[in-house]
Image (cartoon, rainbow, N blue to C red; front, side, top):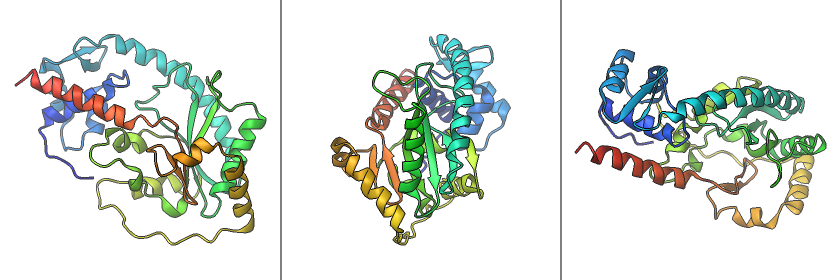
Length: 286
């Protein structure tokens, strides 16, 4: 990812503005961990305290006039604690399948920032050649436990929409061209629930923006009989809307190394709102 050199003040404001999209105020330490610059914690505090566009409440910093999100964060912390207990139970069951190498809670921008009525989004990494089998097991198990989200019921249900084969740990190809602030933070916001053979550590290393992206071509997997059967079965019963969206949507990818089924990928929406928010904030200081 190409990084633009900006001042520390700009980096702090941009970070707070991004998390504001998710009603999530930040502590100085959280700001420091997010920015891509070397700085002292006291420098962050000084910027936050003397910046006119920012306010503070109970140790959290946020955009001016947004003090209500401090209470939102505290409420969601309690909701998230409940959901993570349930997510760990799901992860333990998913981990019983030999093809599953890692399970994480995903799509939560901000630590413990889940809504009460939301489902539980999982990100699962599998052994090479076990992608479709792992999905068949995990979705089938959730179905048996009556824990799959529906249009009417989503609260605390298991949303199993993102699987990745260990043969392709780098997800850089899934990043939107240009600015994609959600993607750039997505892997850093994962909540690890199950980890085997240091898969999580390998995943983070493969997606580190501190080093050049690995551009090696991943060799074509030779699928076994059961994996081919699991793929054929699931493709047969898969809704046509998902199959037709593959290759034509930011949120749907169907291959033997990546299965991503987000009917509504909001990254472009977040990027647009983020750019508008940044433009407004900095134009008021010009």
